[in-house]
Image 1 (tube, rainbow, N blue to C red):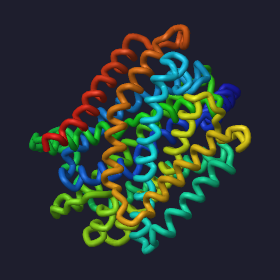
Image 2: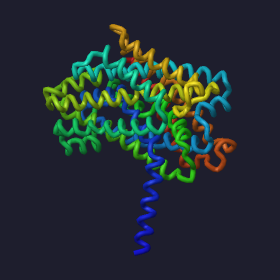
Image 3: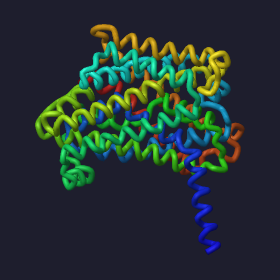
Length: 416
């Protein structure tokens, strides 16, 4: 009996530690399913049915490997990726990298507010009401809140993304057909299908994610002695990312694809679901888009403010007061205001903004990943926690694949 009680005590102790550490991995992974990601998965499902679901498997592996490296480097050094790049690459290179990332993330945040506007229009709410209200609430959460409060709200947002499971099930998918498509996809190889495969795999990882992950483990004060729990957090985050993506593709693949319905954005998918799977399925899909857009509209400018402030030596952190981290909060506020204003401009060129932000992401992603892997293999920085041989093979392999994907995403449209 004593041993049983001791075992139960240990289990509760491990659970307590895990729930205390829980956050950075799940949040970073979940934000990956933003308005742009949902659009990509929706279009893929509508165009190719279940035949591109297999791409989620390599996407999961790449995300897991890169996020683990980020968390380990943040915990060991106690410094953000921006700080380490500046200290080891110099201010000139840092300046050009982060100006590019800043412009890219303004475009990405604008896309998130487009998701807010589109999803709320399905519920009959004008963008001139929804966008300013969401922008103000997001600003209040970060500027007036604390990291602990913000993290709890972010975790609720992460769980809310599972509404896509409900939306997919209402489409009555053929599970046998899904299994067959994953094992033996029926796919005509052409420029369009290759571009979609590249987009699906490439949308899993973005430059800003590396900086946010590293900053969040520092902000949370995590230690290497509990790194196994952090790994579980990261793994759960990656699983949530892929599960949400899977059910978005299933929802569109089981309803829109058989009926030959083509879409251009996530809002179109929500509208098209109504006559096929019912009004509730349409509203659940739209609600998921709204949650994802608000979630990412909070995290993207926050991540940007974090890494730009770190790169140029400014104080940063949600737990700091405005006077303690003035540059950080001004930058965060500026990104939110600019992005929201762009959405409210009649006939704003949203497609061009989205494309150019992706182009900049594609150019900068390999640069960021190469910098990260060089840093994590520097014994002066990492000590005994440098990558082992297998981690380096996987890491450099991921860089090579992502560099090829990024280059292809830039080059393929030129030939279309």
